[in-house]
Image (cartoon, rainbow, N blue to C red; front, side, top):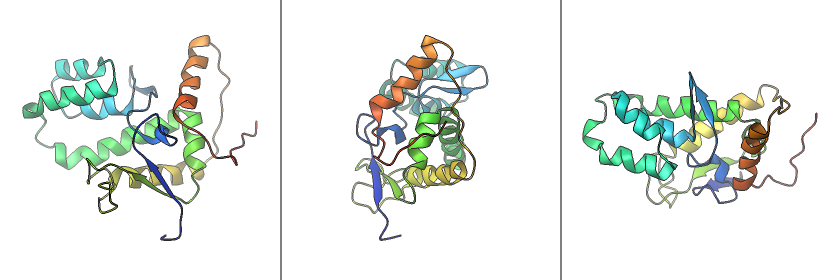
Amino acid sequence: MANCKEVLFYEPEDPNGYLSNFAACPIRVGDEVWATSEHYYQAMKFTCDELRQRIYSASSPAEAFSLSRDFDAQVRDDWYDIRVDVMRFIVTEKFKQNPCFALFLINTGDSVIKEHSHKDSFWGDGGDGTGENHLGKILMSVRSQLSAQPVCLKPVATQSERDLLAVPLLFSRPRESFKVHH
């Protein structure tokens, strides 16, 4: 793997920003549509429905993140036991439900994906490559799952659906080899 190209990401506006949990990407879970995977992940730290709703309604992923920090004392007791499973679930759903993002992820090929964050050595690479990179590992696992099945692009019926599908293009730049076959 040392010879593989690395795909680094952190900020949603960066070239590989679609990989970020802060990327604008609607995700349906049950009857709710979460604005970003960050919103969902932060909300799941809590069992209190009122607090989850506040995070769900946050105007940005940064606000969702900040709210979870404000209520750190109320984080569920089993959070460190389940956090990787929660992240795996929402990241999988993000790419299963958003075909543009799925195609971009598949297009990373066999590259090593790393959240290049000096602020996080658990989810990211610690900024210097020494971090555990759990988010990158989840993304590579999702890529493997998606690569093993056909990706279908469904026709969009409404202007709001077209608008939602346009969002990924603001946050990502696919490689030149990206081709869609209808």
